[in-house]
Length: 316
Image 1 (cartoon, helix red, strand yellow):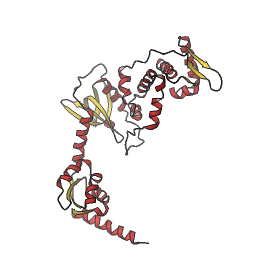
Image 2 (cartoon, one colour):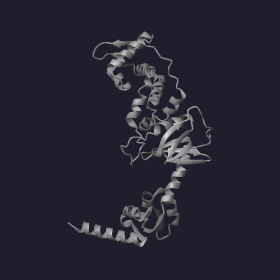
Image 3 (cartoon, helix red, strand yellow):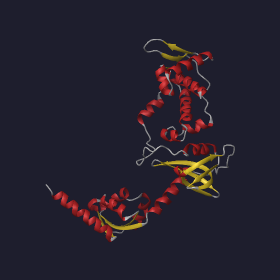
Image 4 (cartoon, one colour):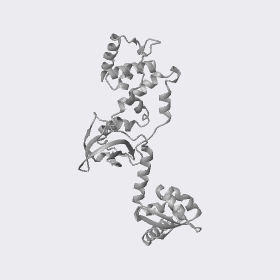
């Protein structure tokens, strides 16, 4: 652990030119006293690091010195491509690996480009968890499953109370919930990570991954299948031209193509929804641009809502 920290310290100084003990301590998440000890150890090991005195002082490397420790290993190279999702890296236990990769990449940049990571971070941010994320900590099974995914190691675990043997292909973070795509026997399945317990990673074994497997395509297909399975109710609407244009913003994406295909010349469409209750909130979004034709239950709910709205806006 200390060797990795010493390497990170050298790369920070190489990439940024000079840093105070306080800045280094904050970056490496240690105390300033630890930084002083680390700098002394580096000097004793022959690394030309020195201290500038005064208010603007700090630690620097001798001009022209460049470490050769900038090559990325496999884990760092793979983690570097996930640097845009720091919360996901932290949850999977890969934050330190990604940090080392970023430092190595920054140290290899030309001096005029070394501020590129900072300027990019000021301008772009990916909010990966999505709208429905919560403050719930990541499931305990996530870190060992992530190690298994990274190393192509099979796992044995309990899932919903039953013991399973799974070849873990990939992890997906959707709306704050982690999922595992894995092969069990001849089938590729999707599992919720928080339902795994007693995860055991067979680190001495590697399974043969299907090189044609595309995680994004697999997830997209299974997500659409799952969404369609929820759309068990159909409603019939008569939409105005404005309502027809609004349809793509109101309908569930999985139901949109079928709804458009069902449209008649007078704007009547058949729309698949999860339930009458959910349809009620969706149809409200149309305002006066949609009339419910069926089912009668939903038409009655909309008539009652229209009556209440009318009474509300008649008040001064």
